[in-house]
Image 1: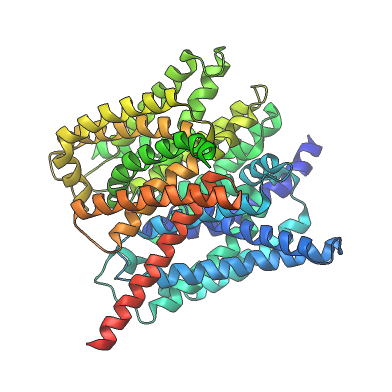
Image 2: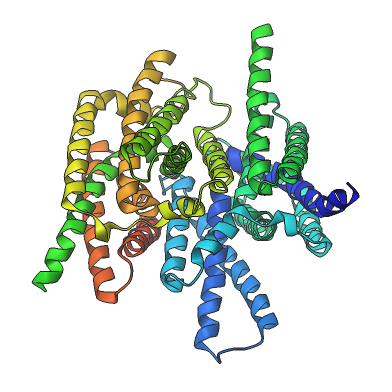
Length: 282
Length: 278
């Protein structure tokens, strides 16, 4: 039993850290109706890595691998920066198509460009599967430390400027709210969000991070309006789902990310039933 | 050259067919803001296929296809019922939830089917080069039937797509039209994804209509322009893929997607020039 506990502790702590920040970002994402942004940004970052791979191959050949890893992360960040810039510029009254459509097209183009660049590289299927499912079970304390620093920095930044970010997000759909220099805040939002996604996806995989973003925020949308309350409700739902998912994954020998996502889905279902019962009573 | 033309004639025909029907649906999808619905539907169809395999039917047998369509239609009907007069959770978020739960289920099932992992990534690529005339014909018949249904109800569909707040009709009347719309849409997507793969279908849905909507608001103009852009775009994509020797699906996707970004920036620059002049 002790080994199970010891083995499961780092993934559990990592999941909670992820939840801490995704429960907050999820509210933004749902209010802005940019649901699939996490998948798109993850794919754009992956395209950045693919480009580095090609540039390195064109260059001096087998260079040092440690250095290559750094340059790939850097390029992934650079592509996120670029995407943040494009999304900010295209958020304009003149552009009448929804932001989600632009995000979707960026996603499709990034994915297929990566396919063209790597052109059926050996084991690309495995890579796709790994990116989707993630490898949260193999998280080490070192990863957890790195993640907690990122969460602390980005979370702190957003906590200090929370009123600004809130206003910009509310102004997204409601045209009556005018925010001074909304472009700058938009850019900062997308950029910090992008960094968070790159770090989170490398630990949890696209699927888990996506579920963490959308489902807790949806659960909380059913019961509350205030942001603090919503974050707390989202955290609670995520906490239960992670606990259940990891336990099921350990006892039944199932892949952990899908198990956690299934539990989150069950949480949402329960929340909808509870909401229905409350409505029936009143 | 003529050999190549003969070889490419089937894929080009299917491209024209797909852009025709998908650009039409795309205008509705864009107006409703449920962009990723096709990826979710494709994922559910894949889940249906895997369920069929688990029940012991052979791959690509009639049994598997029936189960796949049945699962898709059930889920998309449930989705049509999530339309409320006051939307607490946006419909796009519901799509996201359906997508990730379906994907998670597929991953859990994949462990139990030999080579099951393939079904998760198989639907992603797709290849229109290997399409046969038989398949094209069956697509054509199906699209024709669905086109007739849409010809009957087009006014209601457009009214529902245009209504952003609240509902145009009473709750259940709206939901009934929604049901017709989404079931026909689901069938088209399952058929189209089997032929072209998720990304080609996705971009043919969203990109032509986005490009058209940048410049015009009227439904009629949007339909015409999205058809023109979709068909020309996919044929030029085929040509580019042939000349540069890259896969055709990704070539079309990249071409049409990049076009939208370029046009969006053109639109912004046009506006800047106008304001400077006046």
